[in-house]
Length: 135
Image 1 (cartoon, one colour):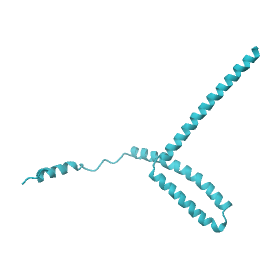
Image 2 (image 1 turned 90 degrees about the vertical axis):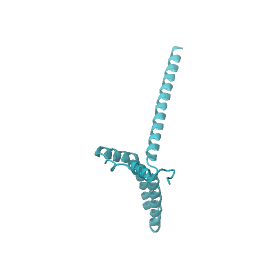
Image 3 (image 1 turned 30 degrees about the horizontal axis):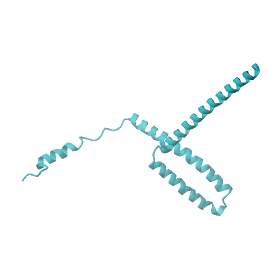
Image 4 (image 1 turned 180 degrees about the horizontal axis):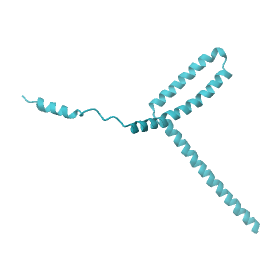
């Protein structure tokens, strides 16, 4: 009897057709360098900046304020928080870079808006000064 799925030969041919022929081609050195560069700019640099900004005050606080008998406990807690942050960074690739780019763009727009507003104020003052001189 034949099953609804076809004979053994038909199923074997369909399975063989689904298997890709040979291994995938290896990436070129340019592709590898582009991927490494992208990862460095997207993940490593933002994490390094945030980690540096985190550890400088933590270490300063540890040696300036924390009593010696509690320094180890304080540093262990700081390491747990840092490890949690790095784990989050690893699982949310590019989020920090995107957030940073968004904040920079927002600051640039505010700066441009402030420059325009200041220029408008200066023009208004100049017009007002001309108006009072003529009177």
